[in-house]
Image (tube, rainbow, N blue to C red; front, side, top):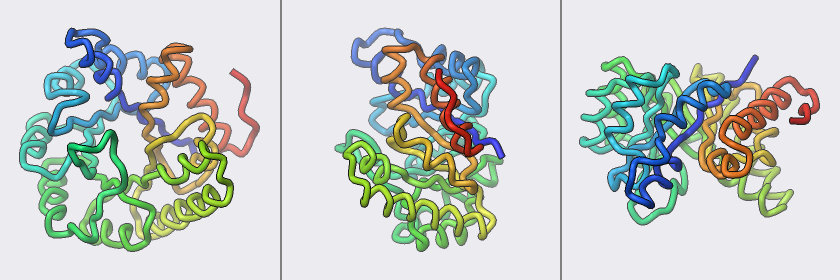
Length: 252
């Protein structure tokens, strides 16, 4: 089964915001991603607006043909935005102002009572709700109990181990991802994965057959500086497809 690629365009907005002008335009990046073979666009409207802003999301909904996946914290302000825009999907994620990027999964087991009403209200509005969680069997079980049809597994530990060349840590982290993905699939949940994925780490993750979608952003935007966004996405797509088929990755 083919695996989907969601491209996160947050860091196009990060570059734009560093200068304060309108360029580069994250909506244009999303359109290029669609042309390059992406299956969806992911963006995270944070409370501090360090990346994309509401106006980017509004334009994205009107001008981009791919499904939009809105990452959001469990706060009323973001819920109001989501209910107004009604994106295809909403992924509930943890968020702390002092972090550079998301540092782990949402603790749905510990924050059950906080997360539950957001899942319910978003599902009632017709959104495909996902929960960004660590690859823990406890977190998977609670995600099912909360009624979220999708989980996204945090792949950061595995990807960091690959970058560090720590084979033992990588093997342990990959095994945790496989167990969580298999357990979620048995429970009838759709499984996605993301965070920190690069060309070097994408293969073993994409090869897990129960994972249906990968969401990748920072690496693709960084690689685009050297090869262009179309080239970066095309290479990631080739590596993902080769890993899923079990064949050697074709050379770009």
